[in-house]
Length: 115
Image 1: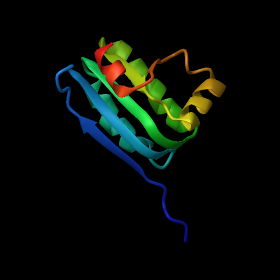
Image 2: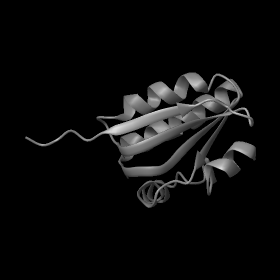
Image 3: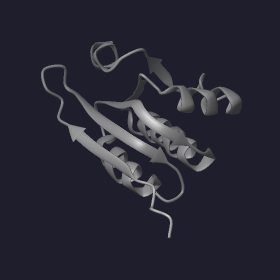
Image 4: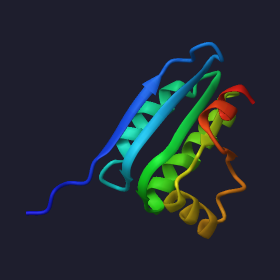
């Protein structure tokens, strides 16, 4: 029996910058999107939310959809959503889908928090 793919999600409070940071580790696909969605969307009521995506090892089109949904919700609510350090796998999916221009992307979490 195959082992289920995992996505671990951690949320760090705004600290001194006021930006909440959501860290995602593992595979972002149809089996795990609700974990990320449940962490991201409530934070996008206001303020700045940074998704640290450096440790996303896989992302399919459904995973990308959650990232784009977060951007949409942030704009609708007057909040700010930023993507930090997307992994090579996530960057490739975003580039193929033409989604890289739809989200603010930063090279690391710190620059995304203070921008």
